[in-house]
Length: 340
Image (tube, rainbow, N blue to C red; front, side):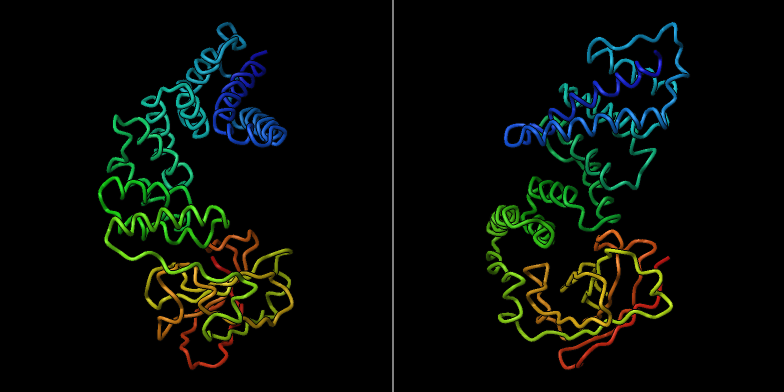
């Protein structure tokens, strides 16, 4: 009964929060919305069954929650007993937020941040909640610091970049906002990219800057319309052949030497059939304001990712970066190391 009550409390909280978050999905795809809620509620219950300690609560004081307030109260009691549960604080913060208790939501997520200070998802969520709790819905300096820290951990974190751009526009820094948003054009889908481009151009107009150049051609036409690029041949060292993950992705990247980690050109393709030949050109530039053809020198590298994530992770197979220029001929890269 004790454990069941705890799971019911968690599920009740999850239902409210998920129903609030997934409102657009309910309207457009109700079956998908129901499936998402059911799956996540089950996951929430299982999480607390596995890592929670509901049996430590006093059974004499434990009742199955009859209302959402009861469920919140039981979770508050559990966190008072054991305040080191990151997901508990996170779930409590979301429940408070769904009830409009923004100040309490902010404080709950702040406690989660103290326990896990380097989680970019949590940092973005906590920063957003701080803004929602502010009287003018403004991102304060602490929220901005959270967003910048999230981007240090994951430079292309979409929510953190979006919120940081909003904070910069709120601070009357439209040029900085546009610069913050531009890398997102490389990772969002077509419809979102169109809307994002409009926001970027609005910020650029506000800053007295010209609009972005037209969107780069699609991958199918890039090879015929882009300027001549850098030819790269990627091989896999025989010693690492047995470590090549199934269904892994290969990223071939050009970036500025001693510059920011953001690539000026990148291609993603299946990691099979080595050696592979790739031509990096302006059609592969993720940032509209920085094209490969604008640089005389770059450094080129290749990375195999089991997760398909462009950000480097421990266990990735990779090459040493090599310098390259417009007249370097074919750059040969050998994947011969495992990222520590």
